[in-house]
Amino acid sequence: RQVLGIALISSRRPEEALPAIEVSLALTRRYSGDENAIIITLENRASCLDDLGRHDEALVLNREIYARRVAMGGAADGIVLAGGNLSSALITAGRFAEAKTLLRDELLPMARQSLGPTHGFCMDTEEWLVEALRRDPNATRDDLREAETIMQDVLQRRRRVFGPAHPKTTWCEGELARVREALAIRR
Image (cartoon, rainbow, N blue to C red; front, side, top):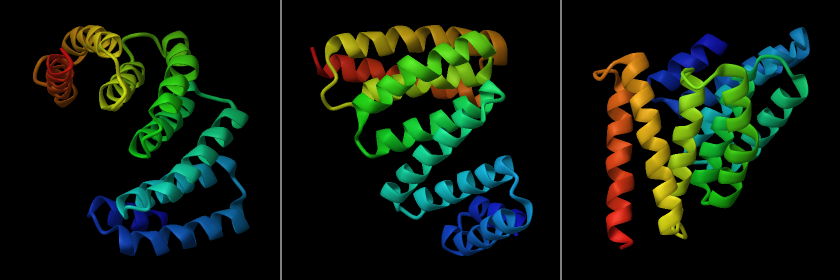
């Protein structure tokens, strides 16, 4: 049932995916009790809720998932990814200050120390911070300059690690352009 739910999400059919994911979650809780499997199913549920436009429910669930991943400990990449999903949900909800605090104080230090600056999740975390800085309607010029500096650095690493044609590299180029556009407007 989990596979069915994921396939339906991938096919952009979240309204059909949600019941399959709910069944999978109930079965996993009842017969397995495996915390990691439960969290993975919750992550799929949160993604589905977000796709359905139920952003407030997705935010609550992403908070729970992040807290469970942190409590569980283990691999930093799982915690960073859960934190990234939470930061995205916070940005969608317009909670930019909370997203920036989570990214700066918790996720970035963990990603840099545990994964290293050339790991994809570390660069993703910096990109999430840039997005929070850029999309914040109360961003100052200093915030946008910080976003520009971070994105220039990430773009250099993306080019070096993944190459200039990689989709993440080209996305970074676009994000850097959006940051510079926002800077030009705030002059």
